[in-house]
Amino acid sequence: MRNLKPALILLLLIFASSFTVMVVTAQPLAIEDVVVPVLQNPVSLNGGLGVNEWSDAVELPVTFRFYNSTTPPYEIIANRSGFISLKHDCVDLWTCIQIEDPIENLTIWADYPTGMPTVMGDTVWIFYDVTGDIATNPGDDEKGVLHPDFTYDGAIIPIGPGYDDDVNLGGTKDIDGATSWTVGWLIIEMVHPLTSGDTAGNDPSLHPGDEIITQYILMDPDVDPMLYGTAYTEQWAYLLNLIITPCPVGGEILPLNYLELMAPYLMVFTIAAAVMVVLLKRKPT
Picture 1 (cartoon, rainbow, N blue to C red):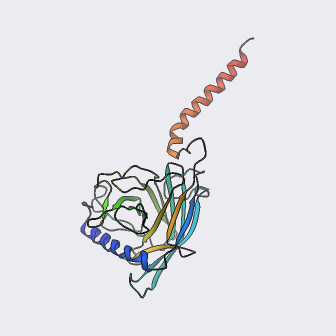
Picture 2: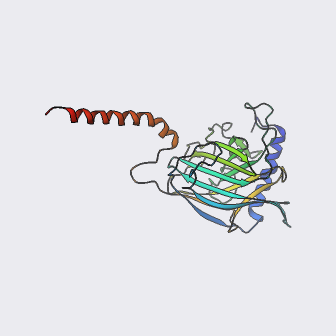
Picture 3: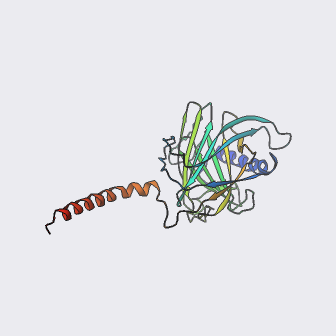
């Protein structure tokens, strides 16, 4: 990440080393299958929870547990409970993360929007095991959403600092997201393609019916700016195997933005068809 401030580079270096240890030592390894359903309700990507917006998603209760160390003995110093919701529209994977968070921590930029953050606020990192070895290694994918509304599309690489921006690697940024904080809850909505085609950025290539192991990490600076919480479900599983359900036979479900673009044309077509019906009825025989 050539454009990162030194402080942020140091933070990510510490994160990289601690993450690698935590996934193999915090609890016995467990992987939970999560069937990701096909979207029925469109999502307004604004960090808010619309009526029934996520009711068609699979919802997992989780607790992000913060440990005081990455080496034994472990001690949980803080918990952040919440939910992870997932669904797909045959084109994109949609994710909503709701977290109980008593204090809002904002990301701060010295030169926004041209540079990277100088202070990282509440953040969710998502890792996709593209290499399929149930570990975080070069070749895997990293995506992040920083509150408020900053998205990061990165890749795990074999040379230091171990992470780099997809664009720096010759790839593309393929993520969009939005966040909000209100009354002790942090809400993060994000979307990215199931298959972006960005191999330079290590993006996963997922088709309906495919599976991929995924991990969710939370950064909450009011716990400790150098500690990251790992998500645990009620079964103490911290690696989720996302199973992308097949799409209906006959075509893909159109994402919201496509439907919005087509709406005016569909309306014109409907009106024209109605006029033709009226004219045909009036035509003398």
